[in-house]
Length: 287
Image 1 (cartoon, rainbow, N blue to C red):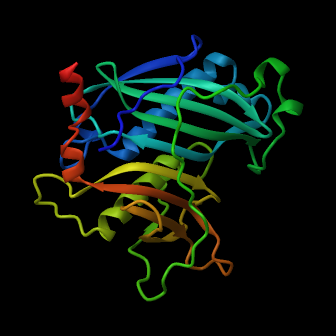
Image 2: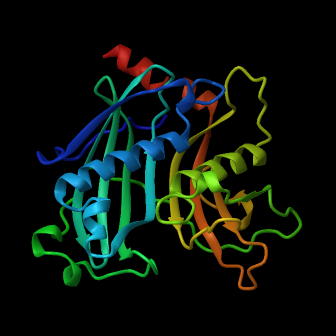
């Protein structure tokens, strides 16, 4: 059984929180929070906190810059269901070289069900090339890195030679509805690709009373952009490590270098294991 999520030090007093009541459109066929909806909530909370700090999208635009998400690592202890109220608390943990670190804790009824750490670049608004924050921004907007409030077992999505015999599990394209204000596919849409690929890989049964597998840990690296009209092949395969470990890549089929758009690694656990701990809503009711 997995240890419940806990913090090793208190969340900073400067942390920012928002609440979301889960709508039916935020949840899947089992009434559980969609992973893509979770990422959407993270993006919204990060935006509003960045704006409060003086680093919102409109504020960065004055420097002809924008935020680009590089990497997200998370651990899940179940997913809440339709109608639940989710509180998301976030704080900026400081800057490491070019990268801003932002952490999150997600809770239902005061019980954490997810911890998340993310890495962001300040990039040129047109070219999306990384900018040095210490040269671009006032010193008070580039704080030093501080200690984390939780430990996160990070997965390592290293480059892999996916088996040519198995081929991609799916193919997806970046359509108009996937494109955000930065003129590329939004990070939440990549997560939809990922969950669709995992479902295809595990041959999910839409008539099952509950899913056979649930995500426990995930690290996603956003490597290059998917632009309007571009197509990607989605690959999944097992990875050495704990039972349920997997690797994922989205690649352009016409890229001669085989450079991925994104790469991910994670751990799926069986629903039987999850049943031993219950959902976040059930756990919260036990408090």
